[in-house]
Length: 619
Image (cartoon, rainbow, N blue to C red; front, side):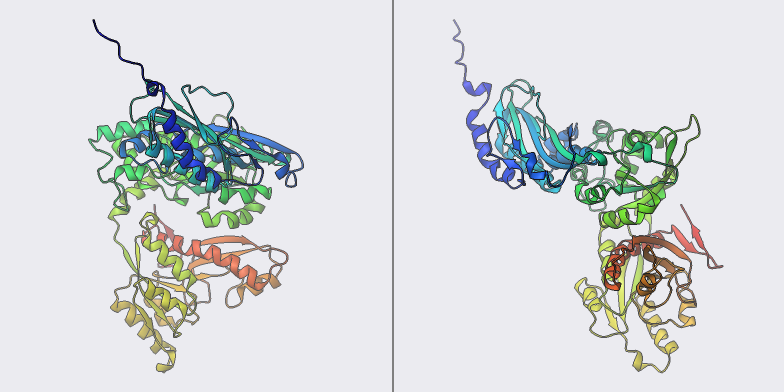
């Protein structure tokens, strides 16, 4: 007669492992705390005192959002990297909260498994905590351990479901959640961990998140009735696929006979497929919230499942359509790979993936400069506008997507251009060019290969030396004429086989011979919206003229003073109490983005100068 085995309590869930995880992740949750969070960790609920924010709001409205990360979890589990999946979880929730105009306050998480791997769980929650910090939301409670995955009350909770709880894995996941909360400046206020033997296979877990935000009632978005023809559409770049479309990606990887350990065919950094696909979803709180709080934005759309074609219509009225130009942003190489390897049509790409844009803002033309000034440091760019919508036509039109995708395919085959930079001062624009050219994801197709200064011992020369770039000082006093000096500069450029020359704060008037020699390969950046205020002291000219906006212009150089064909411009607002110094600082920020963008257009062949001195665009 067989003797039945003794039933072990651990088969129903390991309480000791759960207690171990709580001890490990308490510091992570505390690192996300903010004013208003009450009580300690480990209770039955997390508390937030609304009085802590009463000075900021007259008529506060609470906004709730919940989400998960879908089958992206399979990537983390297959490559055993759990530290950033929590950031994805926070991002998917707090970015949705932003779409109502709200600031994230708190986050809760739910973690379900069969048996607890504490290291994995801790890693996940660490990422959640970082996401909360980025979103300015508080994680106010630590997950408890139950045998049921059913929940009814949801704030910012991360749902973590697992077959058996590996403490190391759990801690890694929690670390990611904490990191996400830090990025979102949100408090991680609580959570639930459900250990369910038999429900999940060993090594498998699931997570969900719940976020709470607050918004002034008058500022609730979208303001659909205010959206009008002519409004400007601003896009914020994504970090790749983010957390949508992974069911297709899993099938694609299998069909291609690849593993997640293989080098990604599209990676500019030489990363594996797993390392590329696990990159966390961007959290847009810090980039977008200041503009929302100033009341300058009419609508926000988080580009998730459904892509650009299905998410933008959620925030615009029926009578208008969004018209986008795909040439205005970088389509990540991962999307070209997906389209080709899985034979996905352009329309299906646009309705499934973010295709390079993670969040969209709609603003009035008069607020464009101010919102761009707030968001520009985070990569914001104008990508389209609102138009009247003819009856029966699509609500979103994306122009030039096929050619933008094709350009992304051709990028790896394009030769790198050697760039020389002429300087006279501190070289902040030079540094922006150096940084962008050194970033493989920027797809600049350019290398800064020489820096020449007409002044000794300037900071720009040191910047070049620090980056390992040849740096040359030429003294104008050693040459009898301007033409002779320019000939010496040109000789240096030719010796280093320079293809393109950038003037970055170069305080000399070039000779006609030099300009003609480098025509079409010579660009300059000027601190005004040309043709207004050419020449010196452009910022003072702007203030004296009472202008309400200024900015910078990148243009080809001709024999006139700032009269060459314009490649692109970036606008900034002029505030009533601006001085030359404050306006200059604001314009500098726009220059640091505009100059690399213009150089990329030139080195990748997207823009050229015609023999008549006009701009020619190529797709």
